[in-house]
View 1 (cartoon, rainbow over the protein chains, first blue to last red):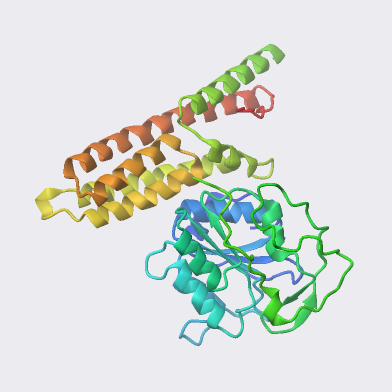
View 2: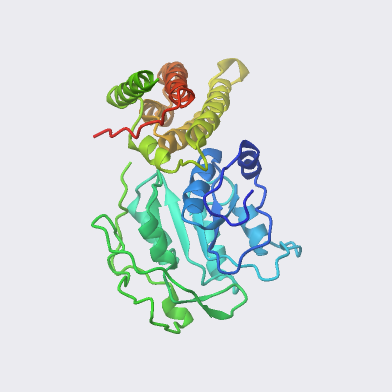
Amino acid sequence: MAKDGGVSCLRRSEMIGIGIGELESPPLDSDQVHVLAVDDSLVDRIVIERLLRITSCKVTAVDSGWRALEFLGLDDKKAAVEFDRLKVDLIITDYCMPGMTGYELLKKIKESTSFKEVPVVIMSSENVITRIDRCLEEGAEDFLLKPVKLDVKRLRNYLTKDVKVAADGNKRKLTTPPPPPLSSTSSMESLDSTVESSLSLVVDDDSLIMLPESSTSPVDSP
Amino acid sequence: MDALISQLQRQFRDYTISLYQQGFLDDQFTELKKLQDDGSPDFVAEVLTLFFEDCVKLISNMARALDKTTGTVDFSQVGASVHQLKGSSSSVGAKRVKALCVSFKEYCEAKNYEGCVRCLQQVDIEYKALKTKLQDMFNLEKQIIQAGGRVPQVDIN
């Protein structure tokens, strides 16, 4: 598997690797965006993984909330995945999963000290307003309706911050791409997309996760 | 050779459009194609292969759950498999399969045995029909490439 995480050939063996919940192997390039994708459906994992890799993200795809917690070192076991710094820039998770739902995973992440600043995006095939509201109230960055489409602009909105808090708590400056124009289909209108890439704001923890002011209605309808 | 390539490309274009028009595929399939490139030229085929394997597994689960000889039917178990199939069919753009899953789910919720059995039969027929159609489509792609041509982007609209 190409370690640059860019556009690469996803071979069948790799798909099976993702399928049985295997983790991506290190090393991680520290400038590269690392996304943790959580979905019990193999087909969906493959599609999400490809979608993210095409936007040059490094992706770790797991098949359950428990595996996600294990990967993040948030489970009860002491043996966390050994990285020099566990760097996760975005977590994207399915809502409906057996065992632990995406909502429950979201709660556990937001309760943790190391990962509560990481934006969490929930995906669901069902457009249930109470479900969406609950997730957003719990601190989800966004709620996407499945099937998930390639929306690079939207993805960048979660990640286009000049400063992010890495898992070890160190603030570091990211070089961001120029802010994308808001498409008319974007529901994240309240997100400030006019941040100049030359600005270097130090954002404190509280304002890092920007919730939309009103309940967003997800863009994609089944 | 050029005439052959053009002919194959035309066939491919017409065939692809017909699949959309007949409701086999929807725009999620188009989205999948966007994820394919020269670096991953078989991405769509590989995802669809996994999808069809999923179909076999899930339909077998549903059949087992609907088997009265093993005891009372657990409709929630059937429903769980239908939900999964609905999800994956939606993710690959398998429009007819997905639509069937929607009805199937309703029958499960209503605990309508005959309705469920009917849906199971239909879903089995439908995924196999799609599989055949897509195999034909992928074969056309192969022929174009073997003839030295490029697979055209098909504009559905």
